[in-house]
Length: 277
Ligand code: ADP
Ligand code: MG
Image (cartoon, rainbow, N blue to C red; front, side, top):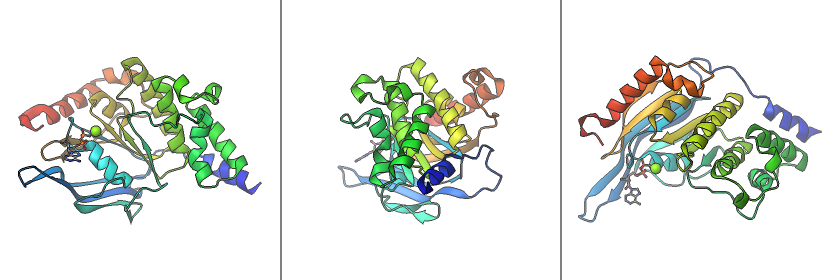
């Protein structure tokens, strides 16, 4: 019974928006990432990047290809190391990957020899979560991403959108503090992409995880985000921080609202004016 109670607690999600002044989940402090160049110089993939994301916020990194979005996400995931500066998750410096950070990549990363259910269960088993609790968590996330009927399928039997649904469920099942998503819908056709944006909005409304989401698509950034970090390249840096003043819950047809369009123009000019990329 103990483990079932724990699972039920875990599934009781807060539904209200974060209170103003909520605690900081992610802090990036003066982070640079340098690579040596063939002429003996240095190339700044990221230069002196600082940002802060509050608990339960949906933050988006948007910018042109090569501005360091993936690099910043990988550093946060602990999959690479900054040349200088530091990254804190819940006040603790990141020094490697950990279960407090869940990743969803653009490329499909399901284990092909495991079923949908087993993929979602993978991290729970590794952390030795008991069978009853595992089952409850897996059933919950299968339902959240609409894959209950496909629980026993293997990844080769799934469409791209379905694979990304599994990847989202797998990441959330581990109950991370923060979900890191690197262009997770970038390889999907436009119709599926819209469906996945809607699905992610719903899942996030329920789970209220802190999210750091990478995209180069301005519509996607505004539709999903509370806060947008607009980045520029050479060197990779944050050009502006924007709060998205559009109410939640968000819907796909909000892309036609005047406030949405005004914000889109603003970000478009930020990213494209002045030869900044
Ligand atoms: P984005 O995700 O915004 O497209 P990346 O983070 O992938 O950008 O890359 C940022 C910059 O760093 C790019 O110019 C890329 O070519 C460069 N870069 C990434 N990895 C390496 C590496 N291992 N060696 C040299 N340059 C790299
Ligand atoms: Mg990238």
